[in-house]
Image (tube, rainbow, N blue to C red; front, side, top):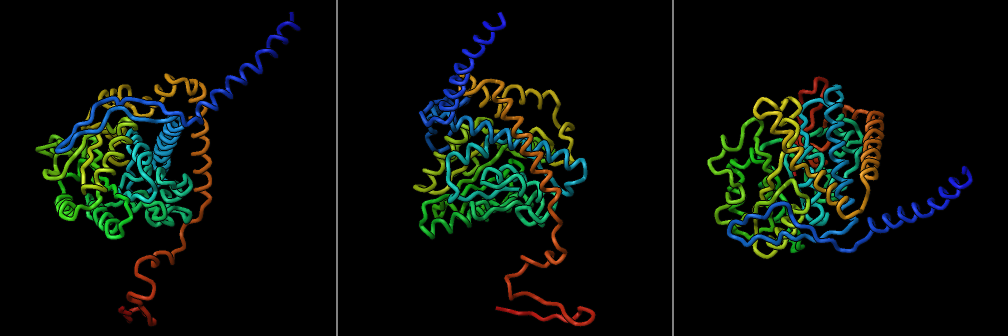
Length: 390
């Protein structure tokens, strides 16, 4: 009997291995799969794109892994903040991962992105590493801004990421400036200037948009509408919370920001439009699970039932998980294994970041002025000044 069992087990081994290899071939396949967005797009002065989006098994699996990594990174940042290893401001992105992942799937690293202070996952999507993220969050030398920027000032110019910005709405005119440079250089790329619904009432947004429209700049203004500007619900702050219509003379498109494929389709559509016709506004209907920042419990202005309801019905990772399972690209166990791998990666990056030294105190004086210019203090009491002008 034992011999029969052993023989049966041996016979099953190659068959199960064949199944695994078949699935591996399937998940790395570039065979097109067509998925439909969970909700239709809504256009302002423009015909919306199709709800049918083409993807591949490999892209679906990448979406799942990338979003799981972003989610785990932000949850780990929460713990590090509570342990006082991250200090100062810290704004987390969990819940909004589909916006970053979907956008990256539609563009190239030659296109520019500039955003506000909820920037960790945007940086990761642009090709940043976990070590650079955690080291920057903890103010260490190996951080993406050498430990001098912290949570709100991630930066990766070589991948077209022009930073997180701490001043509400101030990144939008800068984004239009990047788009001006792209048009001037005739390089056929676009800039995504991202902001939240809380910044949507800023005057500088409308000033920059007016100039972008006058000059037909390839600027795409992306409103990540998570429905709360700090602790203020959108309906209390905006007479017209249809942010995609706010451009008036500029076309707009509203997409489900909890659906990575809706974001991908919207961004692809917006890029084509911006290169031919000038600026467009995208409104991504999304949601943040954490409070506005780590000092905000996030439950005084909304109910816990509201948060758990969004998690159950609209979670961006769960939507991808269902698509992967329905197309038989992986089993539930294989997806859980990916999540375990991701957790391990994050833990290893945190351990490395903790080993990274603090910046040298002299770094306080670097990257302030162009080298060779500025004001130099000298003398015994450092009260004498010498200015070097261009």
